[in-house]
Length: 312
Image 1 (cartoon, rainbow, N blue to C red):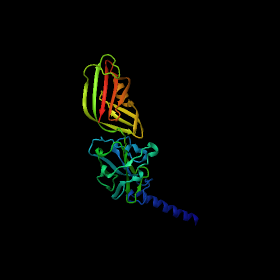
Image 2 (tube, rainbow, N blue to C red):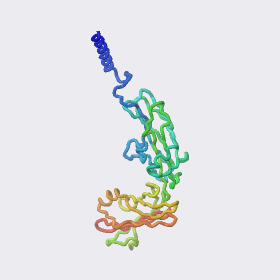
Image 3 (tube, helix red, strand yellow):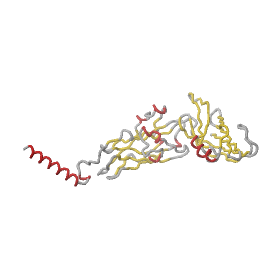
Image 4 (cartoon, helix red, strand yellow):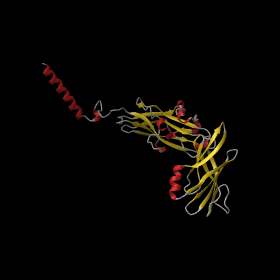
């Protein structure tokens, strides 16, 4: 009797397995290949920081906005994404919005007290989008207004998934931390560039004789890297970046220093036979509105005395 009962159960089991193997995935109650569920995420791929996500605390830096401060308007393109092993069999409507409670999520890492962007500095093109059945992406857009932003203020706009019709919202990648780092000397400047060519090595701090080549009054921007460092290009050769750093004691700035971005220097100057003679010097006006950087290079056959002046 026990033997017959076992045979009956075994036969039923084989019949179930055989039936399941004949069904298509869409016809099955449970997809055996779906080991994890669908998860909703946000992506800011266009920022190009080495990640296809650029969302969540892991990729906080991927949300940095580096638009020129003189731009009237710039559009940030981002995506609502359905992650997981399978797509959905019906349309899914997802909504996004701003979560001001996330403004200081990165404080333990960068010690920057970001202010939530007022709505005068951005506009959502849309706050809801539909991921069509069988698809994974719904494109979204936000317009930012850089020329309206105070370059001395650190702004943040934590954009989050508000609702996904019951789908699981990622705990790691459902927030894009769009942000701008403020800096007291950041912003738009006018730029004078001068270059003297000399056969013998000049003395730093003393302009060589003769008329230099170059230009005057060109627009440029001091771009913040953090609250006490900015980057701006030199006019010479490949126009690599300076990093200008300083100390800030309750609005009193001091100890200004300047150096070239090392990776750019190695790639564009050193690799092409251009050698820095000594170190660049920087002078700053008492009101922090005028900057002059002087340096000397040797290009393998002659010297170049370079001056970059920036002023408001």
